[in-house]
Image (cartoon, rainbow, N blue to C red; front, top):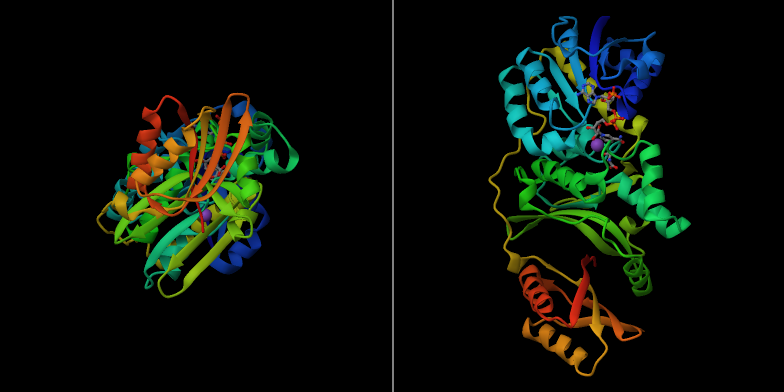
Length: 424
Ligand SMILES: NC(=O)C1=CN([C@@H]2O[C@H](COP(=O)(O)OP(=O)(O)OC[C@H]3O[C@@H](n4cnc5c(N)ncnc54)[C@H](OP(=O)(O)O)[C@@H]3O)[C@@H](O)[C@H]2O)C=CC1
Ligand SMILES: N[C@@H](CC=O)C(=O)O
Ligand code: NA
């Protein structure tokens, strides 16, 4: 039996989950890997908050204690954020320590650079937990779709926002009440801005695109909208049309160009993605040979995420035994060619307010006609002198949509409050 010692950077929601799983499942891990795993040292900032763990692991505020400990072979980064996580991971890899992380901000922004450092130093760098928490999606795409051509990956990849949307629509909670509870339950990032603005989901879609299409996108390449400006009235109106609004990430090959976007999307009530609630995530991978596949599970929370971290730790452990560390987690690489706006086509939900004077609908119809777009459904409600119009269009390209939205923006008497893609 071999003993492998781990170092943890961070002992919060996920870090404490990892500590618990390593301890509780030690026998099974030993059976499967032939190794006894122990968390030797954990790095935190404020020791006073972690005294309850001091009996089972040594606590430190000094990174060098982990870096310079020759017994520690695998370091798990669960602090979050870019700095100092990037510097720590780079230094660890250069000192021949294998690294596991759940840090999507870092991997989405610097993944290829860090993977190159890992490879040069014959170390593993794995990050299954960075996307969709407990769903084993990255290793699945890398291993089980190796030969198939993935054409689309879409899904609900942020637990916090899905939890908020569920509580607001099913329990009648306010946005702020639901967000506070998501923070309390450990689903949200320490600063939840990236969750609610869609940036966290965008980072995950960048990583999914790396695995699905081999491309490296920058966050600036992606249109990102969150749920922080979502109106209750649009949620109700979507429901009246037969749809549920979810924060959806879409990464799609369109005429061999790559299109990635994050935003609220209207999903038909009977579509599997419409039934994903609370902190659960679901990722639908579509590939040429296999067609649609759907992966479902908890996208946030300490223990579910810890399971993904442990799947990396045990994989690294097996590589240590075999002496095979240093292979890339994902070795599919392709140049990024953006899809053409004229090729990206969806139906859209448009929510508008019009001054209720004669000729307004005619004007709107003319704007639609000018861009060669047409109505699939339309409703009007009145609020004094203001008319609220909700439209579902037939499929139109992003190019048509942008021209239409510019026309609307240039007209003082028509205001657009939402433009969301419609699935199906
Ligand atoms: N929570 C979740 O459901 C999921 C989280 N993730 C990712 O996992 C990572 C960890 O998240 P989570 O556990 O929720 O975060 P927490 O905020 O709960 O925990 C962060 C931990 O890291 C420590 N830490 C932070 N910065 C430093 C630093 N500079 N030096 C030393 N220690 C530091 C904190 O110590 P102290 O308290 O002393 O400051 C704390 O122990 C993040 O990258 C997150 O995005 C991924 C999937 C799901
Ligand atoms: N804050 C994230 C945590 C998992 O990645 C989320 O809510 O999905
Ligand atoms: Na995962």
